[in-house]
Amino acid sequence: MDAPEAAGGNLTERPTNPRRPALDVLMVDDESSIRENFAIVLRSAGHTVTLAADGAEATMLCGAHVFDVVICDVRLPKVDGMTLLKHLRGDSPGTDVILITGYAAVSEAVAALKAGAHDYLSKPLRAEELMLRLGRIAEQRELKRELARARAQLEGRQPGPTIVGRSPSVDRMLARLSSMAQSDAPVLIIGESGTGKELVARTLHDRGARNGKSFVAVNCAAFPETLLEAELFGHERGAFTGAMRKRDGRFKAADGGTLLLDEIGEMPLPAQAKLLRVLEEGTIEPLGTNTPIHVDVRIISSTNRNLRERIADGRFREDLYYRLKVLDIEIPPLRERRGDLALLTQYFLQQFSPAGKEPPAISPHAWAALAAYPFPGNVRELAHAIEHAVVLARGREIALEHLPAEIAGSAPTAASPGGRLPPLQAALKQFEREYLTRALAMAGGKRTHAAELLGISRKTLWEKLRALGIADADADE
Image 1 (cartoon, rainbow, N blue to C red):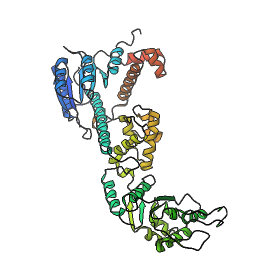
Image 2 (image 1 turned 90 degrees about the vertical axis):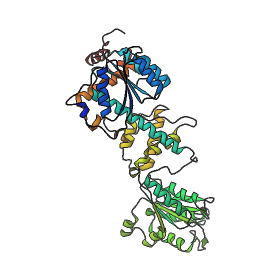
Image 3 (image 1 turned 60 degrees about the vertical axis):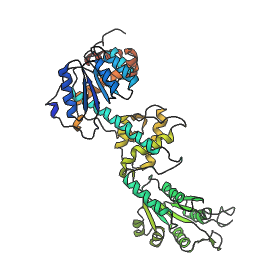
Image 4 (image 1 turned 45 degrees about the vertical axis):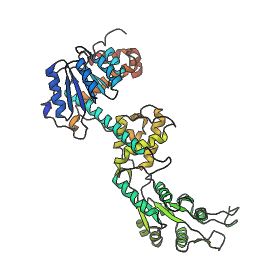
């Protein structure tokens, strides 16, 4: 390897990024000065570094210890870098390998990537470039650990809808929910659209004494004013135009159990008056009759509206508000429980993957987009996004392009260690090198096929490879 190359200052004094986890790195090179120089740079960034002078020593060290990353030259004494790579793929598949070479040949790059190398870099190697690669590896490994923790937490859960979360706000909500479940008092659930209000209502029902009885939900915004009362309280035959037969309402269907009045803030005022009477007297009167019918129903209502504002506007009865809000529970939006994102993502990956198949992995870029997106539609939007990605990925790793466009567009751009953006020309050159190398790997080293994949002519590809200094760009296929 060449000594660490700096642009504008001493690399050992550069600021580190404390948010990135440290890596356990094995640096392999037959020149001691290069090993030591790179070790200084990596250790200054918080990484643990072990040094090896040749491939045989590196093989011995890898047999005694599992490293996160091995950085090694392709041309090494005793055991070369490609042989070491193949050994690690068999004996330590969790170790990422970065190969370094002074002879940037297409065939060698293709062989390295096909053999399982995480990256293949050519000399002269910039220390900042290497740090960027290690930062990506650290983020990817942290993602895998986070999703593994999420899988472990989800194991043993009962199948079916469940409240998923371990953030402090969810823990507080669950504790409050458990204490409310044993009561028959009305509960008002407040939360933004997509936060899971019906799921919370079902959980209240399932954990209470009525769990063996009916749970009935009605969306108060789904029915016109003329039909909502009939839907809730029932009607006799001929009570109104179209009432061809007698029908029990939702209150009767929920007798002995729980009735969820979803979007209660949208209920028309006449229906609010009748609902207040039901809460006060415990009886309903179906449309078309004056005969009261006793019902034993626990009322849970939910809303994404500010009911106090609707009271002030004259659109909601204040006396009904206090009747419904004997107990209340507020569901935090997803943006206030970002620590649950990995757990929820893993839950939906399992839910939407075909039965009997392992859920797909998520690429670091896709995860960065999910983590950066504000999710105005909350958990429901996340669920739809994961289902969308699982369908498009078809069992493969979920990449950025598999996510909905609005989420993929939120992906942050890569920055260099310390949070500084690299110069535009350097970033473009590095991206083009990576992009062309990956295309060549996909094409098995055949430049004509790679050019077709890239949508450019073979001559254009040849010129780009020469400009990037790839040694065998002018060789015949």
